[in-house]
Length: 230
Image 1 (cartoon, rainbow, N blue to C red):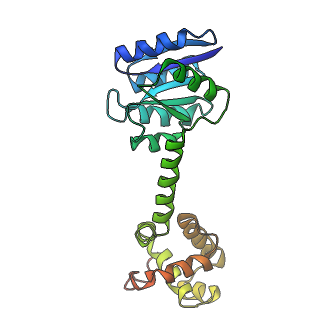
Image 2 (image 1 turned 60 degrees about the vertical axis):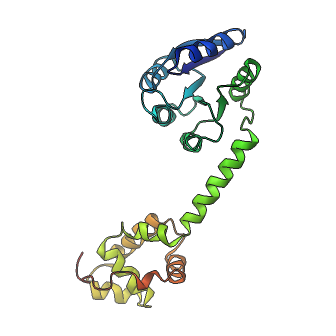
Image 3 (image 1 turned 180 degrees about the horizontal axis):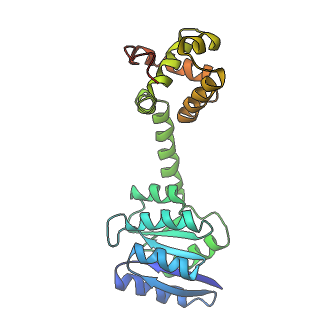
């Protein structure tokens, strides 16, 4: 038996899904709601196998907020997004939060039932159109991550000390020399470098400096900062 929760704010649509799914002997509707907030509470209480989640309920992104919260607390929950258009940009966000697939509100009863059963059975359910959209979005993100804008955004989170250490390393100073000029221990320098790599997700400091050099970022770094500022 597949236990299903339905979160849809429009009563006629919600009742339609209830009728469709309850007609199948392998599916049981454990509860339904018209808000994302209550959906989270009901999932906590009833632990359904599958959740049909509308995106726009009490707010435009209520379903997304609920999806994110549910997946963080109960990651084994299977969430299928209910949507009018498969081109909705919010679908990508839902997939990022952990939704498994979507169901068009115009889908026929057979398709709705099959979507629930396939998702529950762990079968790949993502439609080709959605898969293509995901590939496009991930490609766009990868390109952004390699961009100057992205790197500058990360650098804005660096401390003054981290910026100066990067400048020193770029200028070819040894770690021993950097420690001497900044009156710090080698272990402290290693900690600063670790923080830099964690923020940039770079594999090592040499690769990071090389990438920054290619983007001419060192020309943009605030060279005027006080090198003795912690």
